[in-house]
Amino acid sequence: MCQTSGISEDIMASFTALRCAAIGARNSALRPATLPSRNLNLQATSEAANLKGIADLPGPNTYKILYWLFVKGYGERSHLLQGKLKNIYGPMWRWKLGPYDFVSVASPELIARVIQQEGRYPVRVQLPHWKEYRDLRGQAYGLHVETGPEWSRLRSALNPRMLKLREVVAFSPVIHEVVGDLLRRIEFLRSGSQDGVTVSDIASELYKFGFEGISAILFETRLGCLGEKVDPNVQRFISGVNDMLSLSDITYLFPRWTRSFVPVWKRFVQAWDDISDVASSLIDRRIAEIDARVANGQSVEGLYLTYLLSSDKMSRAEISTCITDLLLGGVDTTSNTLSWALYHLAKDPVAQDRLYDEVNSVCPNHHQPTTDDLANMPFLKAVIKEVLRLYPVVHQNARFISENDVILNDYWFPKKTQFHLCHYSVCHDETQFKHAERFLPERWLRHSAPLSGYYQHHPYSFIPFGVGVRACVGKRVAELEMYFALTRLMQSYNVQLEDDTMVVEPRTRTLLIPSKPINLRFLRRPGEQRC
Ligand code: HEM
Image 1 (tube, rainbow, N blue to C red):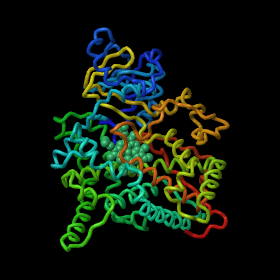
Image 2 (spheres, helix red, strand yellow; image 1 turned 60 degrees about the vertical axis):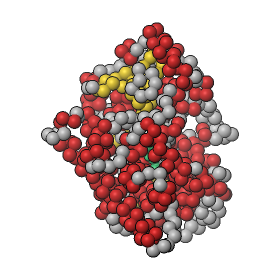
Image 3 (cartoon, rainbow, N blue to C red; image 1 turned 180 degrees about the vertical axis):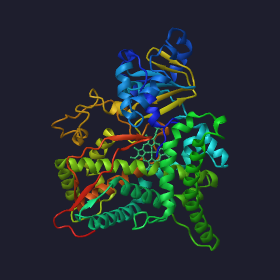
Image 4 (spheres, rainbow, N blue to C red; image 1 turned 30 degrees about the horizontal axis):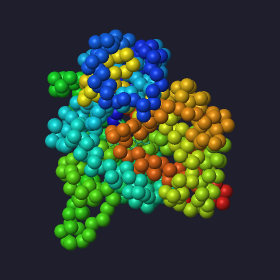
């Protein structure tokens, strides 16, 4: 998962969508490129006296927030609360939760202005309870918790192999291997089903695919998550992530002095222990293999872990936490996005046929796509973009601006203001995306958008991987995994919903995930052989 705030996004988005003033009207449609970013800070000092302050922003208080979450039922639909609160308060509002104070922004212009003022070492959100866990277990802080130049040093070590396109291409063979396993798994499940074609709860299968895919790259080892029996350790990791994400928000709200008698902290620590134990055992196993080879004078080749160990830019403790962070970020993000993609393609046979035709014309006869082939598949990319617009896994991002004061319209915010960026509500804004609630991949294609029209949206109205130097480190890997998986699934199967009247809404569990299992029928394409 990609944690974006200390108060998990559930609560956060709920909180996030709180107050706003009708300030946005005056918010000229400044494009990011035209923003005088650093100067704003100077302005802040000189003009603060003439500007309104955080106290002038409207928004709900703690009781109202709790009412929205627990009485009105937005606890699991906090992505929708963004829009609700925007309607009440306008595109910027303040909300408080106990001792915590937040400012939410829900227009692309305001998001752009926050990002422009994020400083050299952006911080998404402070995660004191994650830090506390790391201290408790003597672990390095890693990507999510680390801040300032130390965070930047970690990113400089991790980025080259993850974000440079020509480096990521090296992961293609292993990703294809894992996609091959996914196809075999689907074949196994569908042929064992009652009607011989149905796979129940595709998201859980794709979760295993996500786990296997990212582990194969990080640990250079195949774990066999897509085999007939799932390794108990993998199951332990999956449950650990689930528990940790579910408990993270609530743990954040309890102060440290409650640790000894509030059981949630113990459960939070247990969940983290499960995650860390599994990740450490995988890392240690691989390190032992590498050390043994080096000791025997053998050459060592590998994908990611070997590269990190040999680059000497991080300590082993740092590598361990960062690899765990990458694992956390790399599993349910890609798997949920793929689940939504299959769901919509199953609901929209025209789009599915169009995608199949594109894949088949670029890669006929089951030819495995290469990264060069992907360059000729605009519709494939449009499908993924449209899915990420409708269901941005990270539906709400955040920035804790610690280096600068911030000016937004005629408001001045002091350093250390926590901003929440309401990405979901912006992605669903009719003024940015015509027919915003509809699945229209063609809106992303300049020349063929008969219904939606090619829509020139604001660049900050669609930032599913975040933006700037703190943006998602796994973007390229995620895209490669999703593109390869979707193309090869399309080559083999026509996908239909088991119940074609079924509607699946998203729900928030830090990330945006399907609210119920998606069961799909995988019908072999005419003339296709078994995978
Ligand atoms: C559909 C797939 C994915 C989406 C939509 C996604 C989205 C995001 C977003 C929105 C952020 C916050 C960026 C910001 O603050 O500006 C993020 C951060 C992060 N993501 Fe992803 N992500 C995806 C896949 C992955 C994968 C595959 C990995 C691992 C290889 C990964 C690892 C991370 C990590 C470690 C961070 C924290 C980076 C930092 O704080 O420096 N993500 N992701």
